[in-house]
Image 1 (cartoon, rainbow, N blue to C red):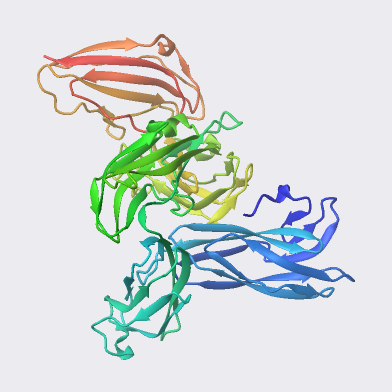
Image 2: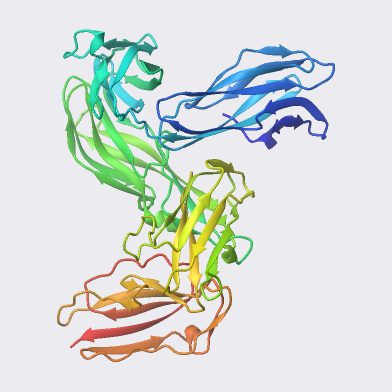
Length: 585
């Protein structure tokens, strides 16, 4: 694979490379990096890179290019460039998923190596196609898979040609088609164009593609990845790697970050899926039943959803889904174990899948003052929000959006109150360790009768979804937690039975850019509820709450069988607590 630029003594990055001593290598690449922008899945986009020999007298030998990517492809013949001349190389992006794509290639020359960055963003295909990948079949199995196109347009689309690459693939017309003139899809329709036939007489990986040319000139390329296995029972994938981000405080105490969710992968093949499916392939002449499962070593690091299932002969079936445990997210350990599937097959009673749970430690940091707006002082403002990568590996950011907190109606959706908006530039991008990005701007607009509120900037990245809180403040503190309605300033305990008990855990945070003194904490008496207030000595009256740090985690008790975990606090830090309790009478 491609390693860091610092790992090679003469590897340089950029448009005008220099030797380790600072002397120019006289190699120019234009553009300095290549961004394809948004590209539809299974529709190739072609671009070029100019490589120029800027030396006045010496030839430049372009030996080869090293690129490890299933989505980016290079056309590169070895070339000798005379002085002051240039050559163009062709680069193709064929997205396999609706997600950010990123790769580096290494250009080897007689003057050293040059590292070059490629990026783009896959968008779901308007024709409704996606790659046929991660398919595992038994030796001797004959596959027949339909290839269908969806027509998103107001007029009919027609196919002019369909063919395959790779000698192991064949195409056949569907049974309802008699000739090629039937290759037409009506507006809004979805029809099978061809059927893909596959058979192999030897085990191993098979790679190819189905190519469909439209009369309009558009081209659809569907990658096909099939692995043929010998007689027996097989679990797919052969190993599972789960990736999680563990956030730490930044160097500046005014900077912080909140983590919401994690990115999950399976050997790099599943991208940012939240769950990894586990499939059993039965390459035998009799059925096999998968009856149970077990996780050895650090079982609390993963969560497994399992369904006992019989797998017919020469077929496959999904039996489980594996995801990251929330307890592991909080702990942040890097652990290894095994997922074992138990079958009734006497030859293979156990199928073992190695599990690897790896933690990214670091944070995406920001300054609180850049995301705080005082509603007493401004009616409208635009604030740039620089974000810095404190992880020890590149952070690939694919999208930034505005979300409502979980405690509000419409949680997880874009707020429609018109108070905040966000403007983003230069996406997708790769942020190197320690680097900052200033492509995010928050727009604030004061609306009549508004009270303090907060929203989240949701940053989608290769280590999960990172949340940056954005506040409109007026000098007061913010309450959050299960049952808290910040807009109505109320705490709901729900419907309680006589003699029952419930608990509400609350958090109080000072989101103002200045200190706030805690002068009084009290509860008003209710007709049918007796209230007992206990204040932690660390949160006594007269305490001063520093800015951006939660002052107290409180617990208010009344009736209920259980309570869910509290909402995300606008800021994240441990603190003292106080509680109140009540019981029905």
